[in-house]
Structures are given as C-alpha cells and as structure tokens.
Length: 367
Image 1 (tube, one colour):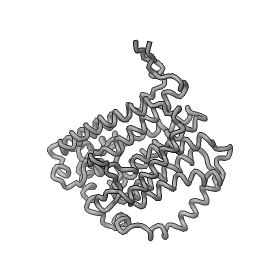
Image 2 (cartoon, one colour):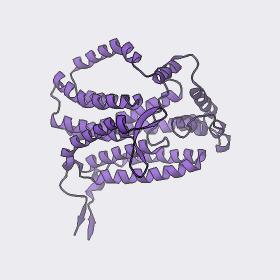
Image 3 (spheres, helix red, strand yellow):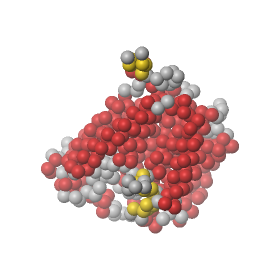
Image 4 (tube, helix red, strand yellow):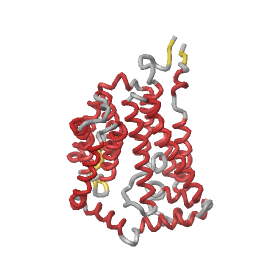
C-alpha cells in the first residue's frame, strides 16, 4: 500500500504557486485572444513545464550534489559546441539541432539552472568567513561566473550573458564579499565602460543609440501608444486595436506587458507588478529562515534576482527606458524555453525547501 508522507505538506512552500499561477492564467488569456494557434502551443509548454517541475521536485538533489560540477561542465561543452555545430537564426548562432528529430535546444537556457546549482555547490563547500569572501575566493567564484558569460556573449546573446553575470554577482553580494572588492569593481567598470562599448556588435550599438535618441524606435513607439490607450481600466477585447491590427510588434512575447495594459489598463499593470513584487519579496525573505543553508540560499536568491532582472528589463524596454533586448517576462511572455527553465528552477527550489530536514527518505512510503 502506498502511504503519502504528510511532512511534504508541512514544508512545501504554497505561496510560490499562489503568486505564479495567476500570472500564468492571465498570460494564457492574453495569448489566446491574440493568437489561438500560439495559445494551443502554450498549453503544450505548460504541460512540459509541469512535468519538468515534478521531475526536479522529486529528484533527490542533495544526494546527487556530487554530479553538479559534471552538469556544469557538460553545459559549458554545449556552449562551446554552439560555435561549431550551432544553428543560426536571425543572425545569431545560439541553438543546437537534435539529430533525426529536427528540434533545437538553446544551451544558454539550460545553463541557467546548472549555473545556479554550481554556485550553490561551490559556496556550500567553502562558505564565506565573518567578513565575507576575500580576493582569492572571489576570483575563484568569478571564474565560474565569467566563463559562461563569455561563451554566451560570443553567440552573440549579450542579454542572456549579462543576466547570468548580474545574477552571479548579486548572489555573491547577498552571501557576502569584502566591501573593498565591490568598490574596486565599481571603479574598474567606470573606467572601462568606453572600451566595452567599442567592442559591442553593430546591432547592439544600434539598440543603445535608439534608446538614447530623442525619438524612440518604431516598436517602442507602438508600445507606448498601446500603454497610453489602455487608460485606467483598459479596453474590451475587440477594441484593443494596437494588438489586433498588428501595430504592436511581438505582442504575445517581448511586448506582452503593453498588451496587458491595453486590455486591462493601469489596474492590470499594477496587479501584475504587485504579484511579481510579492513573489520576489517572498523568495528573498526565505533567506532569514534558511540561516546557514548556503546551498538553498544561493538558489533562492538567484531565482529572485533572475525574476527581478527579467521583469525590470522587459518593462523598461516596453516603456522606452531601456534598449530592446528581447528579454521575456517570466511565466507571462509566450514561449517554451523561458517558461520551462523557470519551472525547472522552481522545481529545484521546492525540492530544497520541502526536503531540507530529512533527505534520506522519500515523501511516499510503500507498505
């Protein structure tokens, strides 16, 4: 007879799905209104994402920690192989084609959970001292942060590369690093900024130029018009002309925030941002409960920072305050890669939270 262990209900974090599910439901409503075909595909992504969540939730991660370095280096090899065997789309070589089935995978997306797990593994093995990490330990950890950053930037995918870089160093900031190191980094970045700009690709410079110009690009102009037309309460489905007449570009993914405001107005935007804010605040607040569990702290902080960056960049570019870089809204923008990646991340996090007190038994007993 199979008996369910009730301890899973005691330690499972029910606030996470409470914040995430409304975002997913609202996303599906908007996508289905804009494009029924994409909505059906999104249902498939929901199913795959749910299976991915359950797989990593049930996986005995803490007992398999020793495999994490191998997982990290396999992903590094995948990133290296993109330069040799990669498939080009829209001028960028970011995908690998799976033989015989003609599906493609994006190693930079797979790298995100492997990257966070590797940081968690390294920090657990050598936790910071009272004053945080010294220069030697900082350089050691920086190697594992900068390596995937360089490989992803070469594809080129500067947006994803910068996200990983910021997440990695944000995690170190929360875990603890000597203050003098952060001051030195700020000075170095300020001095080297012109050199970094000159080494950008032409299309990346164009995005920055468009952002700094007095007149925003066509995409941003249409996004601002959609946002302004929504007013306080938004418009009925049939009157959302910016989206349904195809003036608003990529309305179901990159600019879905503008579409959300066109449909549901300022109140819709406030509700969405409030839900994201509560989710991020909740994740960061878990660090006080986790205390010296550095492994879970790294994963929790990394996911919270990842969501914050994605939301901040996406909304900023939608309203003209950041260059258009194609960063999706977590659980909200249409697409499989981002959705499944975040479901994997939350599956890992729920696993670490739920089974943090007893790692030797499964949550199901067979009698």
